[in-house]
Length: 619
Ligand code: ADP
Ligand code: ZN
Image (cartoon, rainbow, N blue to C red; front, side, top):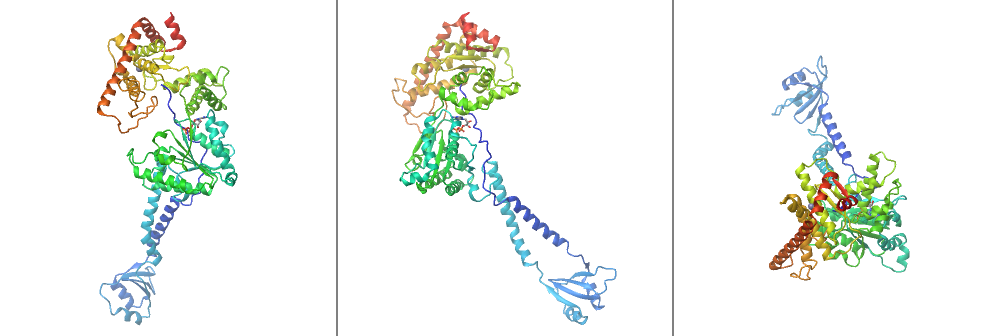
């Protein structure tokens, strides 16, 4: 129900690139020019009168030939008196040698010369090489085109730093500083040391202090890892090389490794410098797990990263920051001393941190008097920094569309709904579907209202949004770090509440609950197999796939339990779910009148906020 990490915007600044030593276009034009020149040179030979051999002989005998040039079996010549013909002529010798020709020529005082039958040597060389040259040029050109398509380096040449695909951000005065990264104070504290080192490497060197070569930043998407890395480089005033792990993996085996090499070489040249590798898990996964294919390439790339990090001495002021949201899958080799031995953990922001982040993002946004950022921070439980930035932007967009001078509280509420529940769909439900949806959502809402452990209801709507026909939004009163068994059981019951209500009121169920059931089953499995909440299974933890209950990562891992345990797990999961279903059925049956009232109100108003719900139920 919460917004997941939204698309991170690419840094706004245009990255600087190394100058381009080689441009495919230049070569193509050069080659074309040569080709054209040759064609024109060949075609535009000075035109001559074309004579048969006997005609030529005749002219010779009448002493009308001034000079001849032998070129292979061709004879080119000029007339003494062309009359009404062209001044020059050409003819071809017959296959058999004409013994009389030379004496005849000498007899008539004709100037004789000869040329090799072939093109001049430079021309021949060019023509031996030209097709290959063209081929190579086309190949380079297309491979660069492909690279650009695949989002790799674009305008860079094929050689040198550019090939690494890294984006280089020069030191700039108005870049992002630490005060633009909010709510991550402990992470900032950890990075201060790195900044000091990059600023004054000599001070550390003199004291023989060894700096960490690598810092691993771990945290969910959108928590500001990239932002923090850039801010670190900015604070230290050093160049910032940024590349994403997935960009290392290219079509050709070995490209990734050479990119790593190029990037490190360049960074060392410009030391002190900071290298940022995003999504390091895409190259740094545990080796040999056979996941995702393309192992060779990944391993080579990873090995190259490790070799580079081992290769530079502690004296070289190059620090590698790497980011991942999957620290659990990283190859242990990456985490050994001398590599990424420092770790910085970023969490989804708590309420106060959310407030701080919101404050950063509204700096350039004019707010109306009724906006209370602490209220916004309170209703954005589970939002990442990126989600919050997105929320502010959505609200500003809404205000702009409404021609408003400032962004109002209402804009924030609307933006929140859109971000959390998806945008409203225009298509209307038919009356039967609408009734069923109202019953379904009322079931969720009422179960949540009646069960003490469940998160409070914020609003219910039967306006189709995103892919859902209706939404019941709950909002935790505080940020949770930990879930009690009672809370989880209540959550199961609330998730099943929609289906329970349909069964209770309409006497049957529909496909609309598929998504609810999926969540229920996933959570029940975790309760049984990982959180020790089943007495039959006991307090043990089995790998069953996803690691985080509400993020829904799937990770195939070898099953570490027996067939009979699997059967017990299945049975226990079913028991938990059945118990939850009984709980919600009982709850709804006891409040049947309230359920009907809620359905009626929903059909009338389509969206009910918490106050309206309370009013309806109190009536
Ligand atoms: P990550 O690299 O962890 O996925 P990013 O650093 O790319 O996340 O964050 C994306 C955007 O979210 C940033 O550009 C920024 O606008 C916003 N953001 C994330 N965390 C914070 C924060 N702590 N303070 C301010 N803005 C943040
Ligand atoms: Zn539902």
